[in-house]
Length: 245
Image (cartoon, rainbow, N blue to C red; front, side, top):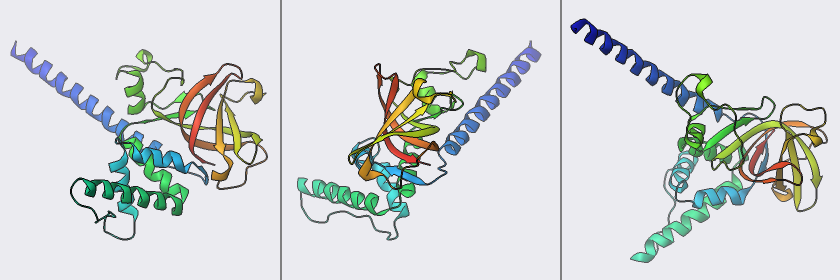
């Protein structure tokens, strides 16, 4: 009987070690996913500012900006008193953040944003060419996957309705461009005719483009938010926050 107890204890300990290692490896892989490779191509400043103003992210974004700024003091309004003082500090800090994202390089700004989103496990990574989703904690939180064998996991899902942010990697093409908007699309997989395949549509503000638009297809990664499915065109609509090529 005592031998059986000891055997069960050892087995339980080994299982705990395996679970710990699995979660530790997943945590490390989550961090690797956010590495940005490429050239800053597009940055939607208003979306970045909107993320900052959300209570869920503003404190973390402010802390990350402070780490990267040359001066060591925290910017904040010293004027005001009583209940007006907190409002004054918040207003001044908002304006400082606006100035920072206007002056900083896009890769610096989006690097801060992605680091904070990953810290909250709010980015799902999508590879359109391979038609794969990275199994990270953001996807587990969204879909409720278990830590069981691969065969027990849901390996495919619709991106429509996903509440987390998405980081979409694929082969982008320009569809149209005006003085106000530039529309890109990226197909699922590698179809012979990308215009007739399943695809994702990204509508960017032309004024926020940081580089000239390539004439042909180009590999890029977009951080954005899923908006809706367009049944008329058969496209998933994603609001782009930043694009790197």
